[in-house]
Length: 603
Image 1 (tube, rainbow, N blue to C red):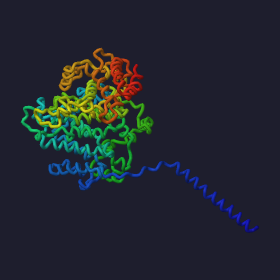
Image 2 (cartoon, rainbow, N blue to C red):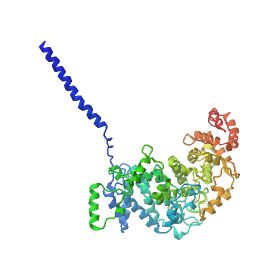
Image 3 (spheres, rainbow, N blue to C red):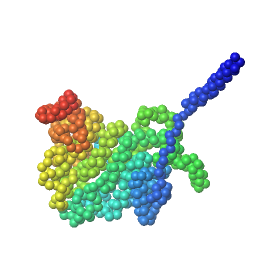
Image 4 (cartoon, rainbow, N blue to C red):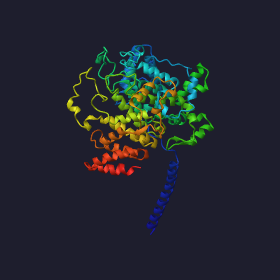
């Protein structure tokens, strides 16, 4: 009995000890749960490269700005090799804006651009009052101040040497200058493939300006010199393939598309709230202050050499810390989950970032010029006037931009000229004089174009890649508003000659009153519109097509479904209905698509 009592006593003592031990554990778990979340693990950033001798950003920038041309050439070659190394993924790192600013300065010096401080300065400040996108924003006449001067300068310097309208004395040297500019833009393109460099590229206004200027490059030619030109195909500075600064610039912008915002609000959020000493911020965002210990040393050095300037020392990021109650008000309006800033007027955003927003808006006139086959600064032996790699890249870039809801206002104002050109790409021939890749046999011997190929059917004769890209963009545009559906289905009745005269006039016009309103209008009730027969015929051919990416038929059906939602497009849908019924009798798949995807949506 005594042994049993001892055993029970020991059991009670164990239970009590267990209970006493469990209580503090429970308290500790509660305490740990109330703490702030653990910081994410640090990521590895390769901010140095063996090709760059493991130099930091400051050293590389100083070499790029050196007076020794051999050192500059070596630095450019090293940067090109480092940025092209896919195994390392070179990141600019802390102070990376110094490298980019050095590249921008080198680009300006090579092309001969001199910044005119104070010219139109008041005009540019006045233009910050209203930067809402309109249909004129897509046109070059909407540019002003520095952006206008930069466009005119680049169109003169980077024009095609074969174009009769260009001044040969203004063109850059194809042997030296063009190669340097190509290399600079190629470095920017390679850096854009590393996600940690995207904020550097987008948030530095000079980089956006350089990429916009490169979009006006027309030094390529298709298959050599034209009639009357003494240069052979080997003497032409660049060719029609994708190795030229225009295509490289568009590819860079495609990689930057998730950050490009025509409203400027996302960049405003970074400027106001982004403030951290974490490596992920210091090495991926420009104009950051060094860590606290280095900052104290730098401040002490500055204090011993000069008088401190509080305004100059204020950082560009984390401005909410300096705004007092204004910063608290901005923080309350910020939605951390959606990453949006509500109830803040545009004037506040434009007051801080107006210059950057105008630089972003200047991209769109350059894109529209690439999609213009009658561009007076471009000349080639192609009868169509297109440069296919550039046109492909522009369609991909616009498709990526439209995915960002902040850019919706820009695409709601899309001009009729762009809709007309996208409609024409739906039936762009792959071969023949009207194709983008056509080479004039008078100047060049073409062995791949034979009579047998020209006698093939629709799938073999149409440029399916351009067709699918254009249709995808049209689908996304028509998803935005009924106005675009109506304007696409009811094309403008302006003749081709009048349209070409307009396209040629926009480059020489200086004021908005010179615009041809019949081209840029978005008037929904205009009597100058008629059924877009070419569009409907192209979509009917796509439905039964088996070429391209494999989704040509669904894309065409979706676009027809969007057009069917507008009552004004009913004549066009009746035109499609008659032909679809005839096609449905031969193919049950088309019959299913027509009944379930198009006819049931006609208004």
